[in-house]
Image 1 (tube, one colour):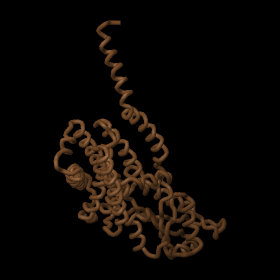
Image 2: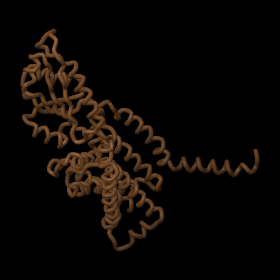
Image 3: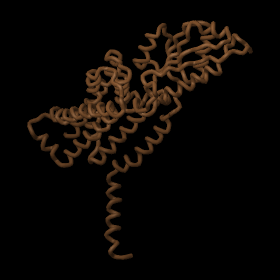
Image 4: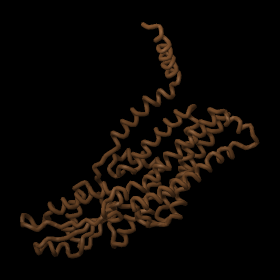
Length: 370
């Protein structure tokens, strides 16, 4: 072997030794992909089934009940409530309590008996195009195959199930995706950049210099969070403006409500970034820790894949993510024009996340500094 090659092998040996000593980074590089592969392979589903569905049955006959049961048997729809008016249908779907509604007119049974076919309507929340397309296909298939048991073997015309998509009648994917991008970008940048900023201060030694100044540690943390909070609002404004100009995203609700409800989400994201900064030693580790959280945050929150299609354990995991609630706020206000009162459960959930996460970060941050 050429003597000149010896320094290369020595350097290579040194790098492997250094990698072995940095066990946290090595564990994150190997462990995180394995865990995420198992989690996402189990959780991500594109076959949307069991949509929470309302029933408005004005016919109130055996045949109308059979039609509802046929829709349930298709596994596309799960009946969650029977309502009495179209106003209740609009209210429940607008607040996200249901994703579809079956409306059977009073003339349904009479039209069946006259052998001229009957009509029913299925209203679908098309803010999520993937879920709405599955519901539309399922409803149309049930209508073609439906034959009431009371007619025996007698021939009847198929039931025409007319599907009416709400909020996104053209089923445009950008209408669904772009509002979600606001939450994803806020989550990604607030967590990763804040974590890296604190770790960078520690690496440079400036964090210790700040500690010996008269400022208390709580004020120090607030000083780290507030500038990024303002940056988050600027970022949200820019994405909203570009979404309106480039993709014609509707803004049907109150922007003041949206900005108010964004506050606890941004604070929670910044708190997570601060918490991750106390667990790692380098900026590379901070970035890896941030992305470890960002991937499930994106895939389990309903940003790309409808949560209704996920297994129940994955849906429970999604409820532990602040982004899940913020996406409901974004799409509710921008696409459906939902008011603040209907979104208060999501607001209080995000406030709870913000309080718990910031409290954990403060405690961990103090302990790390000590």
